[in-house]
Every structure is written in structure tokens, then in C-alpha cells.
Length: 405
Ligand SMILES: [Zn+2]
Image (cartoon, rainbow, N blue to C red; front, side, top):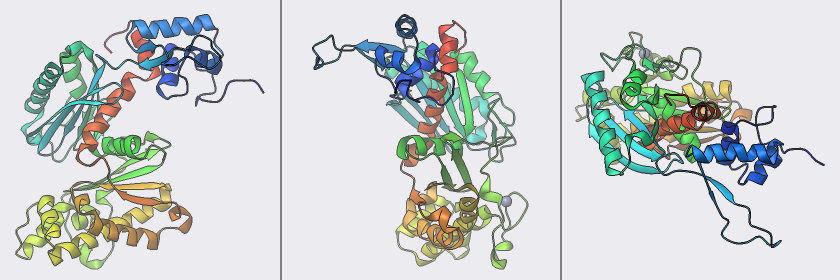
């Protein structure tokens, strides 16, 4: 049988330089001969594409280490050029700012974390990010021109197409702030801005669970949110607010009274979020003001704290059971500050999910603690940047001489 193997998702044969790069990047092709075979392009056309990609610094071509068994000239393998092609990941939290520099293949080159309050506002925080980024590039011996794009995760809702936060509750002064324009003016590159839970979901799927295409990432911290990977891509919904599960109302009459910062009562976040648990423990006379204190008390074996976290897990599980029935993921990852005590939290989550979800939806379902941990957001933001910089459309634009990147 002849014909090209179906390595590409679109029905049209991949043919642009950007699509050729995508074949090499995903491992579908490794040499010029592979590209010709897969795409059906003439050898001379393949050479034009590959030479252009090499000239623009996307690729390098190396000789194979050993000759092949047929005694012919060994095929020269094509590799992504990683030197002087870097992206930045920026993780803005309520009280921290992490900036990482990664090469275009995803290897981390440098990272810095500072304690800052997001409530200080955009010009102060983004000014800090700008200075940090210059310092990291400097340390790595890289010119600012090596920066290809920037990914940013923020702790609030974002309209992804414009990169602007929309009424973020814990980010005063950031509503509609043009974050991408800030970076475009200073670095001449595109910045992609997303909600932090979305970039965490992306990091978890790409790095820890690459085999799954349907993943939910539940962040249980001060608040509660959910990032959704559907068919291998982030699902953001029509306005970008998909996964805002913290304000789904949960069950029993005692909990229904719990007031929520959103103005309603009985929300999941008001029952099971770290802030709510800390308040309950503090009402019992314990020293607890934040998720961190809840984690500390659980680790020290405090029975009230252990019981509350397990109950919180059950409340999360009640909501998750509905999501599992609706969305049919094969992997659910639980992260956020409270996942530091995942034995207790996940026991409650699993109990509720397996009791309430349809067997067909749960028989291959795995519910796991986060594997990317504290790096989830900064790595996920960098992955957003890499996937933009290496997307076929963007590569073709760069080769056509368009700017800015
Ligand atoms: Zn609420």
C-alpha cells in the first residue's frame, strides 16, 4: 500500500514551513526524507522549506552519529534549535511573582520568585516582571532579542483573545489592563495571558499526563477553580470563564448557610476553600488564618483539621461527580495549596466521586495529586508561550518577515 501515513490532524497535506516544523517538533519526522514521504512534497520543495527554517534559526541539521547499515550516506537529522530561542513564563499569584526563562524546547534555564502583592496594581507588578526578565536574560548570557514570546498566568478571569483581566476580584486596578501591550512595547513580542488555573491544567497535561486528552485540573487553595483540557487543548468557553466551579452550590442544610464572597451562600468555595477552613478552625480557637495554616495543622495531626479537610474533599467530590458525568475525563488532577495534604483531601474526593458518578465514566478514571506542584503555573505559562511561538501560523509569519513576533 502506498500513500502518506496520517500524521497530521488536518485533511490537507502539511506543506507550509510552519507545518513542516510541526512534523519535526512532534517527532512525526526526523529527516528531509521523512518530510518528503509524509507530505508528498518534492525533495526540492522540502529543501527550500528546511533551508528557510534553518536560516531563521528554528532548526539545525546534524549528521547521524553512526553510518546506516546499508552503507549509504547517513541521513542527517533535523533538530529544533534551542540556543538563543527562549520564552518567559510568568506566574502572578495573590502574594507571589515567579518568572522563569525556558528554551524553546521547554528546558528551564532560570527562575526567580519574589513575594509581592498583586493588589499593588499592574504598573508596579509588571514593572517588577520587566526588571526580573532582563536580569534573568542577563544571567543566562542572552540578548533580549532571543525572547520569542511570553506567557502570563494571573489569579483572576481573563478574556483570552485580548489578554485583559475582567473584573478580577482579588486584583484591584487590573480590570481591562492591556497586559499584552505592556510586553509588546518593551520586548517586541506577543504575550499570552490566561487564568492561572488554565495554565496549571496545561502544564499538568503536557508534562505529567501527555497520554490523556481529557483532563480536569482542580485547584483547591484559598478559592476553588477548575482548568479543562478537552481533546488535548485548553477549553476556555465562550467568554473565558469555563471551569469557574467555586460558586456551584453544594448540598446539605448546614453548609447552605455558609456565606460566600460572591454574595451568595452555600458555594463550594465557601464550604471547602482554604479560607473557609481556616475561618472554621480559627472559630475553634486554633491559630489558622490561611490555607497554609490548615495544611500545617493537618500535618501536625490536629483531628479537627484532618476531619475538615476530608469533609472539604467530599464537598469537592460532590461537585466533581457531576463534572465527571458531564465531561467524561480520564484524568482528574487535584492541585493548589490544600493538595499538600492530598491523602486526606483525595480520600474525601474519591469517596464522593465513585459513589455518585456513573460506572462507565469512572471505570478508567484516575484521580491524582498534582505532579507539577508549585511550578505548575510558571511552566504552564511558558508552555502557552512556546506553543504560540512554534505554531505553524506564527512560524510562517516570521518566515514571511512579519513583525512583531
Ligand atoms: Zn460564591
